[in-house]
Image (cartoon, rainbow, N blue to C red; front, top):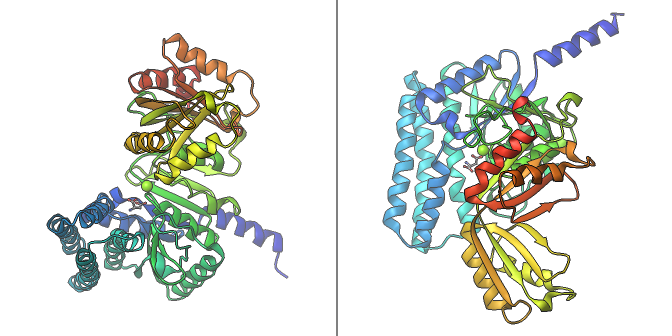
Length: 486
Ligand code: ASP
Ligand code: MG
């Protein structure tokens, strides 16, 4: 018999340092031009010498925005604007197709595939313009084209440098979702089965799938999308389906930061955070991760790294189930959400009247307003609500039309406020954090308008005037010594 322990030890090392199964998701800025696409293809080729790489791509940066703009033009029956923006998208993709491939035969194949996909895109646009209507379903179909087109460029660029690769959309690879268009959720059991079979079959043929992010299909085959930034979610869904060793989100920043470096010059890269902290940061606006993207990783404890395509020397931020104890400081970062508005709802008849809050929030929900933060004074005579600035008019209108003079007496509005949140699971159960926070901002004469802390104690959030936001962020970053390293 061979020596089993030695073989096993070798395998462990082997699996750990080479031969990782890696899902790599590249953001739109990594593929904005032909040289960028070739660079990404070369990076994938060199990583695939040591690891098994499954790449996932966003649309070219700006394309999803343009596609959404097109749906608005269709609604406004502005065919001219819709067509001219569509032409821009066609032009961009055809130009890059002609530039990113050296081998004429491969280039011809790419151009053929692009033409066929763009043909379908134009037909769909034509149909939607004729009807002059955008449904959640047709909107998802249209905006999914960003990824459907970008994967062609990368797959053929890989073929061009000798890697056998095929472009596959989320639907093609087998991601099945519910029919909640615009914010779909994967049906994980079915998805896992389809995706693992498909990827295994391709591996047998030594073919790399180049997967389009952001979209899947419901059980009837209608294309669905995961919401903005949803390609991250695609990557983690795939990773969970094939039990990947790690997921890397490749963007144009080094990772998660202790705060916005535009506000605080000595903001630092955070080296390690837990899934719950990262989720909290995503919810508080960290654009580097889609808020749901961590969900598929939690059960299998698959680590996620946030890394920079343009600075691979930097290891980035790693997100895991249990970060090492020395990174468990009380506070991890100071997040900011700007451009929000505060609505103060008052009225004596609200006191002790069950159902008041429910009525207020259902009124806002019916008006399509997303409530970001709430607090109610214990006297129950006022409720403060924070909404996005864009939703302010809608929210105030709905409250005044439906409830003024009934359960509420007065609606006060403050525009231009910011939410500041301190995030970190180390705060849980530690006495004195809140007093430290408010002493630090108080010392600088900053007025705190509203405060909320969830019972999870993962964050303390408060609201200040926009004009005082930068000073407050700087004060907290200093007070908790976040510049000393993450
Ligand atoms: N292209 C989509 C967006 O811009 C999805 C993504 O990039 O993650 O939101
Ligand atoms: Mg993103």
